[in-house]
Amino acid sequence: MSSNLKGALIALLAFGVFASHDVIVKVLGGNYSPVQLVFFSVLLSFPLATITLMGDPKPSTLRPVHPYWVGARTVTAVITGLCAFYAFSVLPLAQVYAIIFASPLIITILSIPILGEVVRVRRWMAVIVGLCGVLVVLRPGSTELTLGHLAALVAAISNATTSIIVRRIGSEERPVVLMLYPMVANFLVMGSALYWVYVPMPVEHLGLVAVLSVLGWTGGRLVVSAYSTGEAAIVAPMQYSQILWASAYGLLFFNEVIDRPTAIGAGIIIASGVYIVLRESRGGASANRPVLRTRSRHDTATSFRISTFLRLRGRHPEDK
Image (tube, rainbow, N blue to C red; front, top):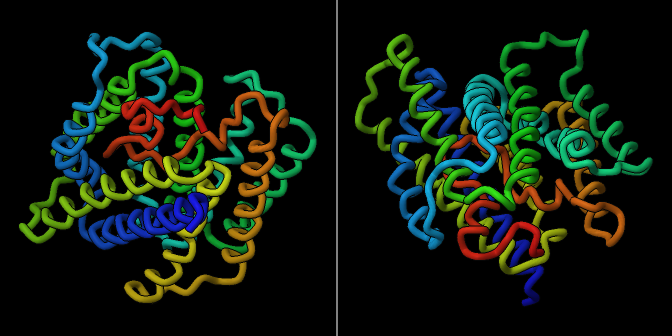
């Protein structure tokens, strides 16, 4: 088996694990506020995050080199987690994925002012076509847009902002800082709001939250393994396989069937994202390759970020 095929298969498994994570979010979201779910998810993730942080051999403080950028990255990561958890709780799985898949398109746009990236006509066309796909999914004017749709859209935008900030400062900030600050912020912010939304959780539901943390950790480690095995241009598009998992899980557990506009819109968004990845993988087409080097799905700040863990292992996100 070739390394690229092996990397792709590992990535497919990883995103299947992540989809299972999101199914549990949806199940629990029917009974609990996303604030409560994010709080306990990050709380139970701290032991696993500690294991990850122990892999950082660099002696230093936890003071950020770029405090304002780290602060902005922390805020956007917290927003992504809260909005994504809420969207998964109230919308069909496939619809949430279709909207969040717009993140690479937004990353491409944000790379211009933040990274100084030059986006030429072909990538601009891919972005425009992809955003049209988002409109197909949302169907403004022909269907009622809910807070869930808004939350998914905000999650896509804030996740893209998080990713591009990490690309901007990642080479100078310690991975520990980039990982720990958003987790601590989630713990403090959600913990402060817990008083108004807390509902007692039976032990079996607490167990499901613990499973959330384990699935997030496992999925992340599998993605790291996939990128360590295969080329990024092969592994990165595998994230779109989550729409297949969403279709299967949605039908099996929630009696959800993907409607035609969602399927068409998702197809347009995915095609645009894959084109941008392939375009960035070509030499000379992009100076920063912001989408190709993001190497993560939406960042909920409840577990480690993929590119951060790669750096902790001594493999910089730009190495492949």
